[in-house]
Image (tube, rainbow, N blue to C red):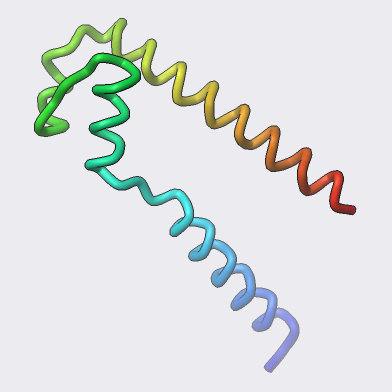
Length: 81
């Protein structure tokens, strides 16, 4: 087995593992929307009934939270070195 093949396999393994870590439980996310953003939906198709501005606000909050989490994770890895 060549080094290129090993690197490719390692990359695929890491990518698959990373993708699994970002899976979202639909029910948990639906409850999060209800609790934090006052958006109550039984089915995600009902999101069409909400104003785009409200959904944009939720999306901005989700992105902001993800950025903060990424910053903390990055700082943690930086401190470990």
